[in-house]
Length: 317
Image (cartoon, rainbow, N blue to C red; front, side, top):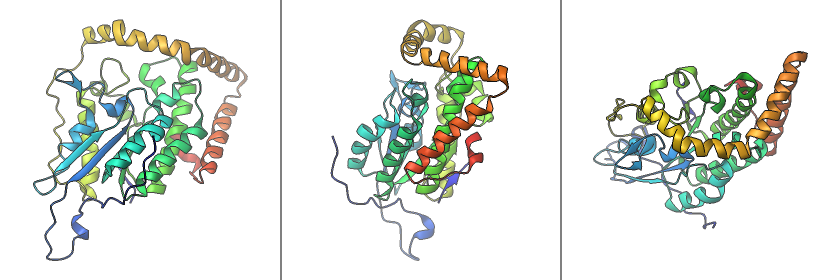
């Protein structure tokens, strides 16, 4: 079933999948069951951009509120941490999630990897494969998503944006391959209809606002309903709080935004400038395709290392 819309702990006993209508024996009522739902990832899944009562809420909590019905209460745990890399999810979040024994688990991570000078597509593929494989082996139904590249979201000039876009395409290709291997419930969040609608985004232009988090929750809910894993009504799409305005944007730039820029200047920016110089040289020489070929070669080697394969065309998704 691949569904799409466009310190270590002992291995737990397999978690029974959430009750599905078509699989229920004839004439036998559904047994009451608590659905355990876990979210792993970075700031997107932590809920950054959707603050309620002084805390981040986010799409995971919104989805959890609408997964169950009277016969299916939901126990929700959010293990996501802002700034997490794929390796952090595998090393820290996944063991805690496995101990929780979730029926459903979202693994959405990768953008932070693209924003580090240490970006390594092979390491990312290994970390994500280990996380997804360990969870799937217990019977957990996985939720995954491909994500937009941060350069486009931030409106960077092409020489700076293209290297980040190439990295994010490679990350998404790995996620697509894992989606096929582990039969995940997959959501496309890299399409223009999602990235170009600014009403969905918070003041920082990198995280969804309340409307965006509600949209993610609603889209995942629709996919889970189609598979018989969601039993409650869909989440409301309209926000209950006012959207960010220009003052919010300026406040973010003066506070959190400044810190973010400083950290990236020490980490990614020097390398990104080197990458941008290479983009300009290859553009001037008409050899830009060589950079794409290098990225594809690294991707194919990374997928082969974890025994995954993906059509070359998927690089553009």
